[in-house]
Length: 133
Image (cartoon, rainbow, N blue to C red):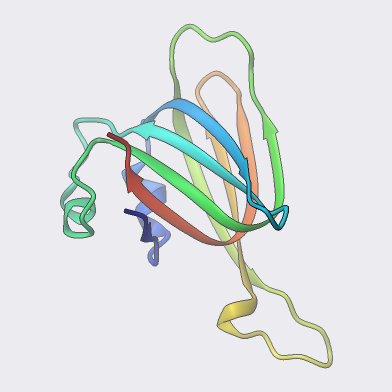
């Protein structure tokens, strides 16, 4: 079951030092691309917030929906699984002089840096988390 991530602060502290073990891109019939990043959360992290959301496994998937930009730079050789070093989320709105910025027009830019040098820059409207069993 996918759970909407409403508090992006969860990503910046809960996923620090998480191991990335898979990355997947999927396309739906409308041509929308949804990146998925699968991680194992560091066992030293307090997972109470995730458990309260119904996420009980330490292996989880993050799904980015309504993506506008996806830039991935993956280093091909690493000494082991890459760890997330930083995950910064910037929120901004799409607006023009004729429209107001509303919650539905907000975008989140996810800038993820990893231990071996890989980087992810994903702009989307929504992010979901799910157990990866």
